Length: 409
Image (cartoon, rainbow, N blue to C red; front, side):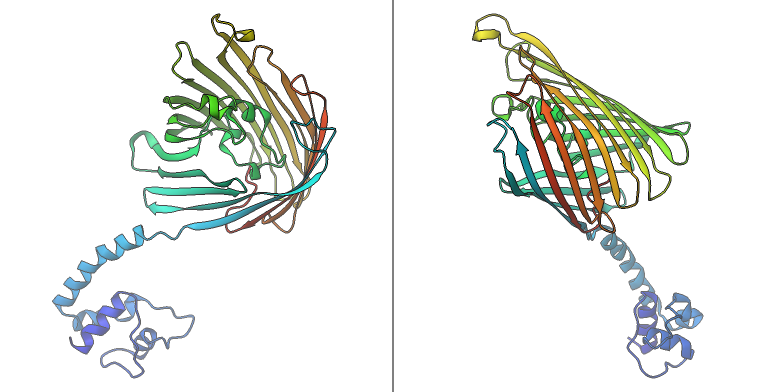
């Protein structure tokens, strides 16, 4: 290939020619640019070669270039460099007057979890996200799903894989997103210590209603556990759930979000073993600047299931309905400081329906930003589900290495 052809090809593809002497037919600024000798404020441009490059390039060279362009575009779309983050959760936990089934009355250091999160666009239409939780009990696939973001009618989005089911607002989030540190009692009583995550498909769509946004979401999945008993009631039947939420901006600094969720499934193969749940979530957020904010969360939950008659008799099972509630008020009064109060309540689905209520205060301090955060929780639990009331103190250190920050609630 002639020298002029080679220069034209390299220039068109945006690469520089390693030349130290002028090229016949090209201006000095052009060959210096493509030999890496151009000034810093004079970036390479295709127009440097101008018509001269066209004259020196044969028809065969341009056909070769046009053949390469689709491959270059495809490689750019399918080459994924995901954003990877590590979030560490270190705790010092102390109990006072706790029953034996709760734990020992002493302070204990515990590295609660290391979360590894990765996510990236797969192509212009879809993305994938993976979240792994590593603790002393092993490695847990918390989430691993792909989402089709665009290209479907009615503004539909489809998510498939392992994910946190959007039953309510709180269940979709990880514990490091909360200033109150621990998962609400109602999620633990209804779904187990990790809440409800399962393998399935989620279909959602968002439509505008004036200044508001209305979101419809439906799920079909299997897996997980109900009522905190994965051994006895690990369900393999197809479960269906849905949520409708409305996001409304009140002012330029304040907004509210309301949601209504429902879920139904069959526990085991026994006739009449249908279990249903409902959830109503409300969130108000006021944030005029980066130094101040107020977040109010209220989320009640209700569920029903069949339980065996008292004493293990042969009579018909009895349907029991139980309730749960979580509410918090989180106030950021400076950029690095926040504090708040919370109320946590849930019943156990037995004939007696014993309840447990927790309430307390929390505070947080972020060093420079959310990549290094100290949290404090002081809590008291009492109720008919406990032998006696007890107190809990937790000092938490959260750190984040990567773009994924611990607190986004």
